[in-house]
View 1 (cartoon, rainbow, N blue to C red):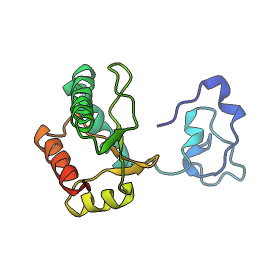
View 2 (tube, rainbow, N blue to C red):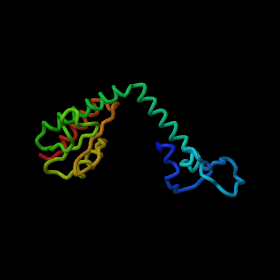
View 3 (cartoon, helix red, strand yellow):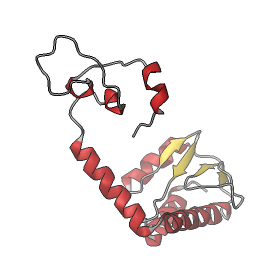
View 4 (spheres, rainbow, N blue to C red):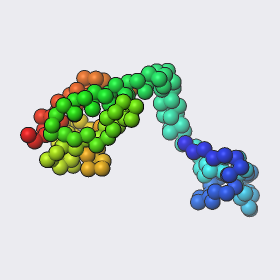
Length: 162
C-alpha cells in the first residue's frame, strides 16, 4: 500500500509509465501520455488483483478477530518466548523485555553457538525463524498455536549446545 497527500503528488518523480497511470486511461491512440492527477498516477499497469484479494482477506480476518485481540495474543506469545528464553542461561535476549517495550518480535542469542547454524537446524525440524542482528528472531503471529510455540522452544533448547 502507498499513501501520498494529494498536494504532494506532483512533487514525486515517476519512475515508470504504463497504461493505467495516465489521465486519459483507455485512450490508446493518445500521442502524449499525461500522468493522472489522481493517485492512479502511481499505478503503472493492471492492478494486482491477486494481491488485492489476498490483502482484502487478510484485513477482513484482522477486523473479524479485532485489533485489540490481535495485539493481546501477539504480546502473550512474545511474553511466553521472553519468559522461557530468560530462564535458560544459554540464551541472552537482545530485544526489550520490559512490559510495554516489546512487541511481536523476540530476538535472542545463544551465548556460545552460531545463530545461523541454529536457524538452519531449526529449519530442518520445520521451525522457522530468522537471523537478525546476530540473534535468532522469532515473530509468532496471533494465530500461532501455543503448542507450536512451545514445540519451537523445546526444539531450540534440545539443539542448543550446553
